[in-house]
Length: 267
Image (cartoon, rainbow, N blue to C red):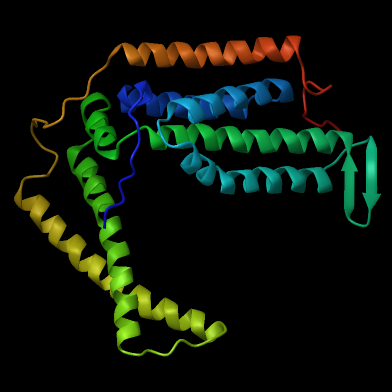
């Protein structure tokens, strides 16, 4: 089964994958310590621009991918808005208690989830897994037996999906009656999971034997078919992230969207 998607290669695809991975992890940690709502909103706008205009994928596909993350944004924000703590009450009905403090804190949590989503999707959509593992072996000195094991495991995903459809078609041809209710869920779980797991275990065992036969033990120096290095795009990406952080902070100070700075609540 072919799971490749058509896209236009941009400069984000040419960044060193290891550098991009560590920069994204650094951004995730940095965002965790931002408690100013306006700064976080403008930073989310910057990451969204990076995702929307430079990932190289069609806009319809990007919009479709973002749908579940908007649901996460709404659910995360609403749970904090409706049940958070605060002193300035806006609405109180039964268990629902909306305060000014909980409202801004809920919006803050929602934007934090959204920026994680846009940065994570930007990394995923602009990084080939093979290049990532080759780069980790060459720049981060990842043991080759782990890197090639991950690559072999990823190759198994489309095979498992194809096997799932094969089992489903075989059940239809043999006239297996579909049950309803809770028993149907248990029947489907048993019918699909046992053959898929047994086939995966056999295939994993064959791959392990083949890797050991080809000396994937992690000892000695190796040569690589793909050589992953650094380029000017890496410098541009670092500069862009730093500029995005500074510009969003400056914009939040000059043109704040919300009349609040620190959203942390201290009782």
